[in-house]
Length: 461
Image (cartoon, rainbow, N blue to C red; front, side, top):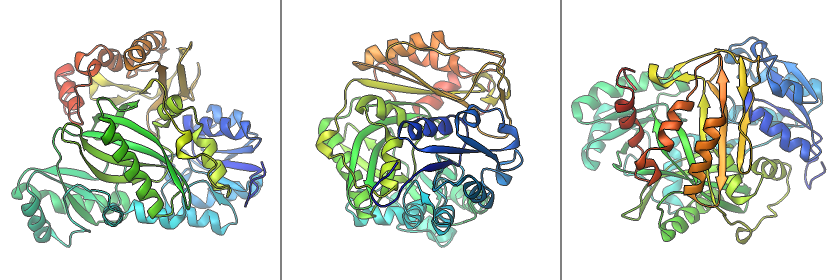
């Protein structure tokens, strides 16, 4: 595919599972050849057979394969790829990897490395949001220097507060503390964990916003101009990991929706954002208040619900702007129609504290029909490896309104059949019939409280 600036002829997919399949499909429709990397544990995954060629990059352990920059760049060299798409997770938000890709003369399908650095540093991202005039959750203006300094800030903004790792992401690196004693105990532990998990022990503080909704806005930029594709509701979370997402958000006043989307575009343009990303907010819908919390500089797991309500292929748009083409979509071109819901079907047992369940898919029935989409990478006989996350696939539905979408989701969940491993299907079957869910009466704390009642024998959730 020839684009202004760069010609992408072959794309290396530097990820695995369903997102690898998703990327290959869009690239093929654009006439771009594909090369897929895989570990020893993933030789049988569908993306390996779908790509034009595939390269083994190492042992099952992610650190020796999907996180191995040198092995991935060598795969790009031997396959003649001229671009790399990192998907989500692994190296997707690794500024050093983006730098290495560019130094190798390849196109990185994502934002510039400096943008990843800016927004990946959560404290710095807060500062940039404030400079752009975007409201942020009350907290420290940068990393805290120590426990005493943190206690002083927490005292000013009021407990409870969250201690967050500057380099955290995906809900990791966060601790909630209710009083000064907890803070003094938890802060050193949080610093040690941040150092081990992210290679950076810097911490910052945010006030806990009670009864909040988690709303994220999908943005796309070409490095100069940015647009939004409206918002997603992501409040149903366990341990700050999203399990169920919707577009559009539920019970969101129109003036608040407009403010959120405008703020997201403003922030994206202020940092010269290129590619697809999401700007995430905590939102008090009744009070009409919203606060920036972070920006994810990659495609999100939940992007399909936005595609379903807007009709745009976000991966295709990522590839276009990565190759140097300016945005051809104007904001007035983007509208939403109907309602979409996505649930993450994992190989986990909700009744056993979401215990991961690797194993063999003995039989499988994937639902279909109008308004039903399944983004997955499994088949009968497929062995789910124990080395990575437990996502089997994402079941996405669309219909003309939310009530109809819930009915369609219930039907699709009934049709989904998988034998051989435990899945989270039963969890979502229970949720789709719940009156609070049906009427949109939930916030970021709702699901964990419900899980404690639904699975009292499961232990800590």
